[in-house]
Structure formats: C-alpha cells, structure tokens
Image 1 (cartoon, rainbow, N blue to C red):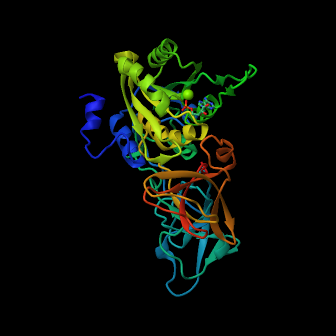
Image 2: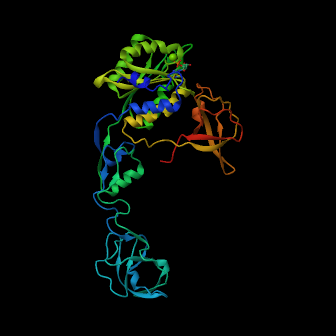
Amino acid sequence: MSLTARFSCLNEYDPDALSVDQARTFIRSQLTPVGTHERLALRSALGRVLASDVIAPFNVPAHDNSAMDGYALRHAELSCNGASRLLVVGTALAGKGFAGSVGAGECVRIMTGAPLPAAVDTVVIQEMVQADGASVVVPAGQRRGQHIRLAGEDLAAGKPALVAGRLIRPADLGLLASLGCAEVSVHRRLRVAFFSTGDELCSIGTSLADGEVYDSNRYTIFGMLGRLGCEVLDLGVVRDHPATLEAAFREAAAAADVVITSGGVSVGEADFVKGLMAQLGEVLFWKIAMKPGRPMAFGRLGDGAHSAWLFGLPGNPVAVMVTFYQFVRDALYALMGADPLPVVPLLPAVCTAAIRKAPGRTEFQRGILSQVDGRWCVRPTGAQGSGVLRSMSDANCFVVLEHDRGQVAVGDQVQVQLFDGLV
Ligand code: AMP
Ligand code: MG
C-alpha cells in the first residue's frame, strides 16, 4: 500500500490539523531500521546501536567473592549468644584466593574482591573484629551470607547481557568489557543528507548582498545530526528553482537514507514543491497543530536502492529545531534500529511568568529551568518568535504546553523537557 493510502486510512487524521502525537505516531509506524551491520572495536561502539543480543559467556562475577575487607568464616562456627574466637589460617586476596580448607574454629583474612574460600559463607568486616595475634574475636550478631557478592549477580552466564536495539552508553561499554567483548556488532551509521532552500540565503564565507540572510539552519541541523551520531552530507543552499531543486532532491535521495530540508513548505511555497515531489516520490504535506513548526512534509523520495525518507522542515530557524527534536530525532533513532527508549521525559516545574496560549495546538516555548528556593522553576527565554534563534541558544529546556491547555498564569505548573542529560 502506498504511503498516501496508509495515511488516508487513518480517517481521524486531518493533514491540515494533525496533532503532534498523531504526526509522531504515524511517522514512527512507517519506519523500519535501515542498513547493514558492522563489527566495531568496543570503544568505537559508543553511541551506536547494538545489532544483535550479547549473551554472557560466563558469570560476572565469576565466583562468589567478598564485598569488604575482613574475615571469611562459616556462620555455623559462631556462638549464638556471645563473641567467638577464631584462628586465622590464611589470607585471600583479589586475584589470589586461599586454596586451603577452613576447619572448625578457623577463619581466613579476606580482601574485597577475593574469591570466597570453599565452605565459607559469611564475611565479617575488619572494623567489627578484635584482631589478636593469630586469632580474631568476632562479636555476636553476624548474619549468614553478609558482605558476599554472589557469582553471576551482575551478569548471569547464558542470559542476554544487552539486547539488540540498545543505544550503547558508557555503562554498556564497561559492561561489555566485563564480559571480555573486544568487538560488537552494531547497525551502520545512518547517512543523512540535508540542504536549505531559499533565494534569500547566503552561505557563510561569502558576504551578504542586500536582502540576504545567512543560512543558519544547515548549522543547527549539522549539530543536531552530529549529536545523534549520523554520517552527514551537507548539500548547501539550493535556490527555489524547479530544476535546481529537483537535482538536489535526486542527489540527496541517491546518496542518503534520510533527506532533511528546511524552508519551502510554507503555504506560499508548498504548492511549487508539492508538484515536484509528486514526480520524485511520495510526500505528505501536513499542517501540524503546533507552534512553532506548523508546516512539515514527510515522505519517501525515489525508489529502490536510491530512495530515502524525506523530512521537509519549515524554514524558520526555531521551527527547524523544534520539528527536528519532536519528530526527526525519534524517527532517526527508529531507522538506526534503536529501541523506542530514548524518550525524553516531561517533568513538572513551576512557571514564573504568564504565558499566552490558546487551546488547540501544542506549543514548545523555550525556557530556562533553575532551582529557586528549593523548587524547580522555569521561565521563558524572552521573545519567542520562530525566527528568534537566541531563544533556543539561551534555553536549557522546552516548556511543553499541551494541546488542550489555555493560558498559563504565574505560579502554574507546566511541563518541561530538558535539552541535556547526564550521560
Ligand atoms: P520559508 O519556510 O522558506 O518560508 O522560510 C521562513 C523564514 O525562515 C524566512 O524568513 C526565511 O528567510 C527563514 N529561513 C529559511 N531558511 C533559512 C535558513 N536556512 N537559515 C536562516 N533562515 C532561514
Ligand atoms: Mg523559503
């Protein structure tokens, strides 16, 4: 079934009044991971998506071992109602266990990470005991099994340590290293081509003519794609001329998995691009109930091996970033084969300014989240026009004003979406 037919099957979806959630859900439903897999040295796999499950070949830890520095003993040796004196018959170190046996009335000095000697079931930390030459006095009140890390409690032999679709983070590198994995199989990088459209645009490095503006979208798009680990192909500025645009779309679709454009989808220009798209592929033009970023095109360009997904973003610099983060980011992760995991949570915060808002569209205001008197508060970053890129640059979060929400008064709770995370 064609993309257009699949979209029109959803009879509650109106292309001229699509909600943010509907657009996101439809896009996601169309995408399957692209690309082949490659094996990479472990460090190079950071930020990539695991292509197959990694099954633990052995237990981590491999043996029961001590979680503390102290004395390893058999709990049954301890007196029930008083201190016990035990003879220290040896030492177990990390990497060099105690090979002998521990008899009645005996214990072993043990260090953190040392394998537990045979038949021993409890560790008493060194601060608890009174060492007295060759023996130690252990007070009452020790619990059987205390201070022991069990074999396989981190990763169990034969079980998946990580599953396909995992976006590999620093902890995963360490986890894979703990299994001795020197290489992993990951999805290849996604290739994304992008260009800007507009007769008024000038590229940096040339001087501005009267009425021209520097093309900033290619730089924000470059930055956003770079953070997602995509391979980028910058096709520059393309003039609003049918033949030039057609050539750019063909080149991009042939070279990349995804094509991202900015500009040319607003009401005044869309008809012209629509005509072109009808020849080059199958592209849906939407007016999304959101601010900023109302117009957007989504579809497929070209056919067979020379085809690519297209995201035609609006031209306004803030709208480009908002639509990228709200739709394209999620779509790129899906195409990379990642689990639908990297969902960015919405968190509550107190709004310290009034915001004018009408129900019927989702707004993404740019805000600064900070702690005031122990409470998380957010204030918008001043002028919120969709051309005011400074509002994005100053912000550390989006203030997400839901579709049905009306005015926001000072002190109201709003939802925020943070730009940066810890890892
Ligand atoms: P458009 O969507 O093409 O009608 O563009 C909307 C607004 O965004 C216009 O003011 C354009 O000049 C501006 N704009 C479009 N593309 C870019 C770009 N690449 N860099 C900076 N501003 C742009
Ligand atoms: Mg334009």
